[in-house]
Length: 366
Image 1 (spheres, rainbow, N blue to C red):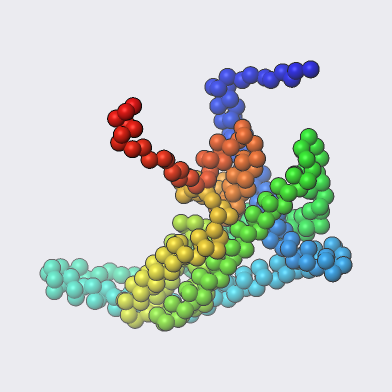
Image 2: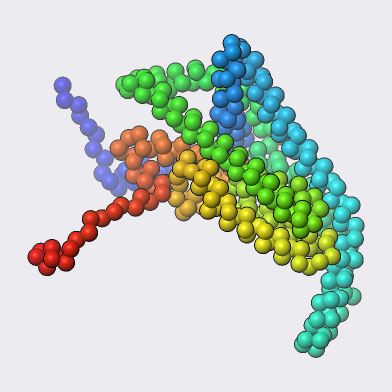
């Protein structure tokens, strides 16, 4: 019996896609408090799956491997957060002489303006350091608010390890569910696709992690040579923020530049920080990321930037972190079917095709 295919006009197809996108974005917005921990837990589970498999090869029960992976993840996160908080608290002592530093800079600026242009605005007398210090103290709580925004809420902080544990515990069960969904296809092929998607995320996260470690070493070395205090903190923070393309590295360099400007005697220190940042980012963009991360993501720059804007507007900082691997997974899924391959082409890098050269005689002959 011949199967009947339902024909839908092109304009109705476009309208259906637009309605689907609107409904999807709406669900992502209202479900942020649940979906962000769910995605975070899933990516952590994928990252720790190789270690769990290795332990299970030595007949360690899956529940035990899940607990070990969970405790290791919690230990790494708690240690990192404790290190950041300890350094942020110590900044209060470093900014005690900020008013004297700014007053000295304003006096130098007044002298230069008076000698060069004959302008005498008496900037040092108009400067009120208490206003700046009060502003810093009043907004110090925004650091914790920013950290909570990265995971959605305090509830998300509790849900992430729970989701991670269950994903590790039931990963084979989830694979069997996907095989049942695609029962009309070869089960071995479906499993192979799931494994390839899992390896895609693992390779991306591990590659980004290797780049972060190298960047941390380079940043710490450069800041230590320049003489910036808390070089380890700024170097590590800049490497972590590098996970957010375009925006993260910019934030990572603004902090040490401002800090060195306010606390160090030489005005050349912020300039040296900017120069070292540019050199390291050039090395990262042209060598480290292409060689280490390689083609694991294979997203074009425009869709990456657009995805960052959309992810940031929907889920904040967490969306900017999760959107890149999510888009990479979607690109792989879109390539599985001919009907969705145009979407994979939209997300991926443009492939340069070599056109056969046409001789002048052939053109004239035509």
